[in-house]
Length: 299
Ligand SMILES: NC(=O)c1ccc[n+]([C@@H]2O[C@H](COP(=O)([O-])OP(=O)(O)OC[C@H]3O[C@@H](n4cnc5c(N)ncnc54)[C@H](OP(=O)(O)O)[C@@H]3O)[C@@H](O)[C@H]2O)c1
Image (cartoon, rainbow, N blue to C red; front, side, top):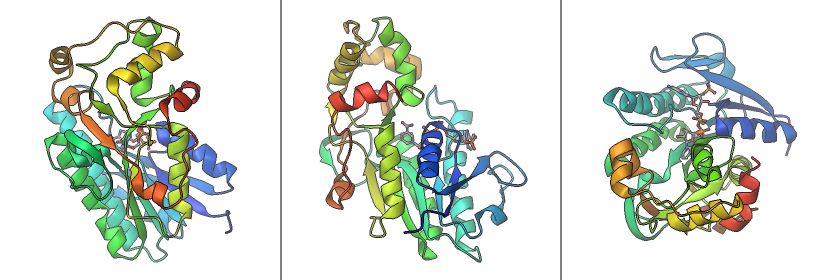
């Protein structure tokens, strides 16, 4: 396979986009970015419906990572921003790709494990029933549907239902680290809720595997096989940092501080298995938390 191919990313400056850009460059791809909230060349702006079609013509693949941050209290305005950036952004991008003269071969678009709801018993695979419970459940349903026009137009399309990405440089782990470094970390609620995570380095390899695997399924759970309970995660992180782990945060405090965001993320209980990717031959470098955490703390 020739590696000298153009890959266009949205959200290239984000946690995943930065790491993916480095890896794609290492592999010899030519990486271009479509910058969010930018009118003009190499831009995409959901508010005005602007997208630079020229930048997309002839690309080998488009990888769509852009989206307004989820963390923080969800005011109405914030919910609208989160939804518009993902649903309207994906619609704009997918509809544009479908009508290009030289369409990309591949379109990869992010989604979240909230596609399975908030609390579910047992383990969940790509074949499990989906759910539209909660703000994130409805969001991810619409977000995934928005990628449809690309698939219908014949572009090989995959959505990645991504778990919590572990890397010290961004996302949830970066937010947790200051408290854990001070020895103030602990379980959240009763700590029994399942925590589906993926190390950033493995996620980047999984995205590249999706890019390079023609038989890649249309839906991929981007989570590591070694799902743990949240309390186990807190203990493992504290141990890794050589700090105590004795300050639990009760569920009601999470609800008070973060409202619905806390309920749907920090208190959610989902055991999501990466069945489709593993069955199709993808191998995780760090499938378990004890192998992943030391590396994630340096990423
Ligand atoms: N990190 C996780 O744990 C996790 C888990 C599940 C799903 N995901 C999804 O994976 C995608 C990438 O995640 P990430 O962690 O790399 O996110 P991130 O670090 O927050 O970066 C997201 C990117 O989205 C763009 N963006 C920011 N605000 C925007 C807005 N208001 N409207 C449109 N675009 C905006 C920016 O793109 P520019 O670079 O163009 O400025 C930014 O670099 C997101 O869709 C996220 O929801 C992430």
